[in-house]
Picture 1 (cartoon, rainbow, N blue to C red):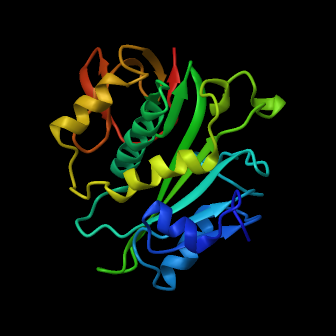
Picture 2: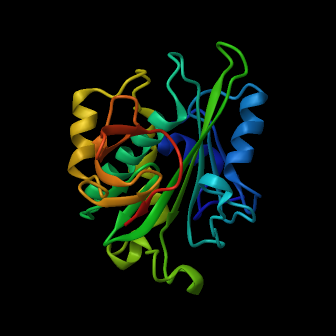
Length: 246
């Protein structure tokens, strides 16, 4: 199986990872990562699919993943320091923003796991942890990115494809910038000041009024990656739920 003309071994070499599995069709790249991790695959293993038939986002939402239209990627992390999936999702989001910046595209993170361009969703991130047992624990990172438009009619109002804003891009050119960033992800258990400042510069929710999961104004994140909301009672932390702007 080739992925845009490249085989698994050449892709692994170009992306700097120990293993790259390429599939024409999968239910979900995340499912493949979980299976490979349980079989002992090393950290940094990548799964690339041309199509997902049951791609998913947070809260069991469906992710539309048509053939040859986007990057449907799974990435294996074996955290040695107890880094949480929520915190890891922030770091992956920052890696996606760095990739876009290299392509002269400005993106924003909508907490906790969406990457927006021109106020429309370009990419989604999902991190699923499995305890296993130290040192066998792992986190499967899933990234879905719309690369070639047009996007499906049912999501056209809220979604965008990368080729609408970046000329002459290919999936390989994006992956060659994105995956090395994933390889460098920090595994510290707390976001440092630099990471929080980088997030703040591209925080789509900053200052916006929310109606859910708390009523108030979004005012950044803390070192654990939790959303901070200014309410009449003071600043409160949000660690999960679906964000709805007022």
